[in-house]
Image (cartoon, rainbow over the protein chains, first blue to last red):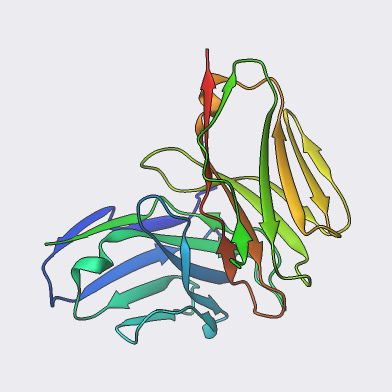
Length: 115
Length: 112
């Protein structure tokens, strides 16, 4: 079975541009979460979606937005890119459920570089 | 106090030894605990998870929970050079859906 797939794998943008990252969850998983990881730190929670509804949002500015589609895939959008947005963006999927204590499985990530 | 804390290391152990990785968490309502392994330049890979009802052993890996002390540990027996990686402890916050809080990770180096 395919794992979590993310695209693109690498992306180079300049300050002020906008970017869209994509994620397809493991088959049967209904919950998708997005994380940002900078070098030397653990991943930081950005968003979680379950059944197309936003379930949680981390401490990120409004330049970050996301959505989930009926097939449970998801997009993360970042507007007005800043140098500090350079990071590895990770998507994770899980079965979901009321409290979602199930393990989350990560894709390979999208490495975003801002020049 | 950080919500999830780990010693950043590096932790160096000889091949064949037991590596012990530790994690403390602040949310007393936490119900599950995850350990991820992350090789340099790669994404985190889930290697162990336990729920609040007890410890778990899987091959060379054992995860232990001490709820009273809010402490989770990961033991790796018969450590191999291929175990050299950063190990991330992650805890979903109680009543906040699936928001996973990660520690900063412990770098493990297994020397042949």
